[in-house]
Length: 473
Image (cartoon, rainbow, N blue to C red):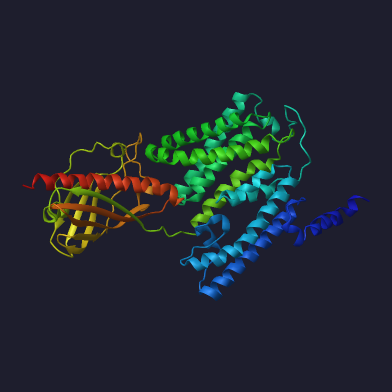
C-alpha cells in the first residue's frame, strides 16, 4: 500500500517547494525539483536579460554570451555603458539570492556542508557545483566511525594512506592529461575551463579518492591535491603537451584552485561514514568536457591592452630619435625572463622613411614587421604590427615543441615611441605597446604579459639611452 502512494509522496514533496518557498533558506529539496527549478529560473533570467537588452539598448545576444561576461557570478553579459550594468545588476541580484537559497536546500538534502553554496558565486566552479548537486542523491545524517562501509566502488580503493594517495595522484594525473589534451590540442582553448575548472576538479577528485575508505585529515587532502598538480605538470612536460615555462607560470593559479577543490572534496568525503555514491566521482569527469566544449563554441574577443614604459635620457630629442628609428644589435640578455626562453629584442632595422616605411624589430624568435603610420620627427613614431614571431621558446626535452599558445594567443597590435623634451636638453622617451592575449582568466595572465612587455621595453629603451648619450657631446 505504501509503495502505491510513492508517486503521490514525491509529488507532494515537489509541491512544497513553491515559488514563495524558494526565497527562504530553510528546508530541503530533492534532485528532481532542484534541476527543474534551476532550469526554469535560468530560462526566465535569460529571457528577462534578452528582453531588456533588446528593448532598452537594442542589443542581440545568445546563451553563449554568459560565458563572455565580465562579472560571471552575476550572470551579466558584456556591456559598453555603465547604465546597462546598473540595470542588469538590479535584475541579477534576485536570481543570485534564489540560486544560493536553492543550493543550500539541495546541500541540506544531500547532507553536505552548507558553506559549499559559496561556490555558486565562483566563475566556472559554479557549474561543477550544479552538476554535483544534480548527481548526489538525498542522504540522511552521517554516522561516526573510522572505516567506511564499502559497497560498489569501495573495494577498489586501497585502505592504506600511501596506496590511496598513490591512486589519487595517478587518476588525477590521467584526468589532467586528458583534459589538457582535449582543451589545447583538440579544441585549442586556453580559457576558464582549463585554468580554473581543471585545477579545481583535480583537487576535488584527489581528495575524494584519498578519503574513499578512511577519513583523512585536511592536511592530507591538501597534500594529495598539491602532489596531483605537481605530478600532472611534470607529466604534461614529459608527454610533450606543454613546456616547463608555461607550467611554472600556470602553477600559482593551479595550486590555489586545486586547494579550493581539495577543501570541497575533503568536506564531502569526511562528512559521513558510508562511502559516497559513484555519481560523485563522475562530477569532474563530466564537468571538464562540458566546460571546455562550452568555451569552444562561445569564442570570446580578447580586450586590447596597453603597456607603457619610460626612461629619461641625457640627450636631445633629435639625437634620441635617430636611435629609436633603428638601433644596432643589443648585447646578450642578462634578464632571467629572457634566459628562461621569453623572446627578446636583438636589433631594429628600417626600410624607407616617413609614413609607409617598414620597420623590422628582430627578436630571438623572429622579426616583428611594423609598418610606420605616424612619422612626426623628433616627437612621435607610431606603427602597426602585421607579423608577430613566437613569444617564447619552451623549455622542453624535445627538439621541436610548439604548443598552440605560441601561435596567436599573445599578439602585438600597435606600438609607438613618444619623445618629450625636458629642461637642460634632456628627453623623456616613452615606449608603448598595444596587445591582446587569448588566455583566460585575463586578469591573471595579464600579470605575466604586462611584466614581460615592461622588461622588453626596458631592454630597448636602456639600449637607446646608452647609444644616444654616447653620441651626445
